[in-house]
Image (cartoon, rainbow over all chains, first blue to last red; front, side, top):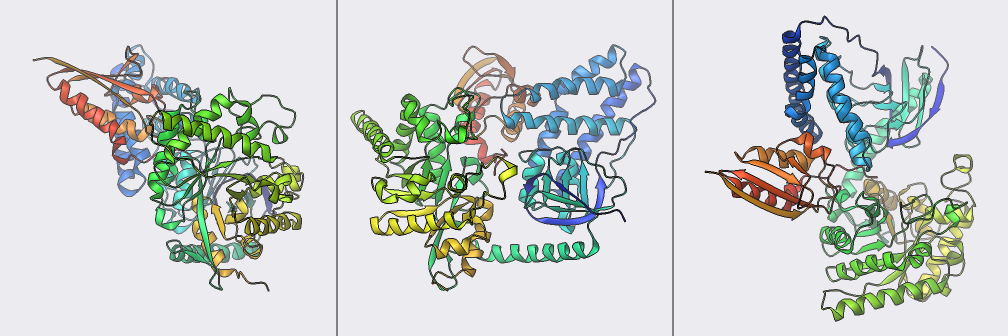
Length: 532
Length: 100
């Protein structure tokens, strides 16, 4: 057996899987006998009909029919097939005509402004290849259950054709964490790593995928495999235990209640979630709203987005962070291009106060939605108390304006993120904030002077650094003295490795990614609030 | 008998007119005999509301105003039904945008 090879990519779906390595994109010989024009017309028409039947059959067996319904609708649309038939009429063979017709559509989606529409190019490629395989008389080879699938990318229909109940994972040279397949993998629980780059697979027959860390091991040693198998089993058992606690309020082993809220970036994330599983929305990242291709969102568009979240939360608190653009989150037409060190530049509240015309629109939308439910507003990247005063004055002004115009509104409590060390060191100076929410990702990056986006210093950017934990404990203590609520909304709040320390530090409210709700509640149940 | 009808509605669906809502919209449009066109502005450009390929190619963003124009025996019923579908936010067509 070849020596084990370790590779690193990006995590697209969590979990660990190991199994035989199966190539997805073995070159298929698509050569076929070309007939006359009538034969070619019939061949394409037949292949499209067969493709529709095959996708429909796949949809029968799957719960994720949305993508497949879309593919069927596209194939049934003569706007897709007519150009191909026209090419055949002009003397081109069926396969070439079909490829050319689809190439136009694929190029169109690839050039789209938004990630969502760009990602549809892979659906079109999926449709294209299925019809080409049928034309060439090549049946889909059955992909085995329990295997690690590898290749440049995997199409949604290939993914859905696999029986994942027997385990298995995905390791891709290319791919993206925002592809349809990555979304499906996360929802079904298939560990997936993308972006491994070109890799030499010759001789390797098995692989291990660690979707938590983005690591892939080719030809893992047998004892390693046994360990992975045990890990996978305990992972499955863990999920069962998580399912048992997710619907209940969280509490530590010694009975101290802990609020677990969720972090979201858009109302669409809430569709598959039950509000009963959390204590509200602890962080709404509003950056995504500002990335639409229709430019910056107006007041109505923002109001609609926030209202959907408030309605979903059904009386639970919703904490909206004002635009945190800049740093690693540029917004075209808003953030400053070419700053030499954007993480230390004009980001968060710094940018909002420089662009009051844009900030004002967001504050108006937030004051209006506050009439609808318990909304709180949180300022990112606050460095000096004056920033709170300036934002508060603007908020008061828009509330007065709305009241004068008799538009329903309320003045939401205005709190701050604790992520700049200046705040974490002297929280008592920031008493004008109505509450504190510790952004542990940025706080860690600033305290350890290790950029979040630099893999070379990733080992230093550790939230368990005693300095970070000591600052967190200090903010909690100051919050108690000042009677200000303190919560934590960074990644460490959903991480079982860090939760015991956070509980010990006095944190009683965390806000985590929705998929980590169960994991966080379970880790809290195993932690103790009282000192050792 | 040929009738004409038109109507417009704001698209509130997250991400805009993406795959799932587009499938619902074109399927509904196809259930009517009338010719139906969809415009992203009051003066077009107009596309065939029965073609998923054309509707998706329009890449309509959230917050756009959708305009429907129908011509045929069931024109007003068609416009009312399509406006209703958008108004009801596609009856819970779940958003399939990237998340996490």
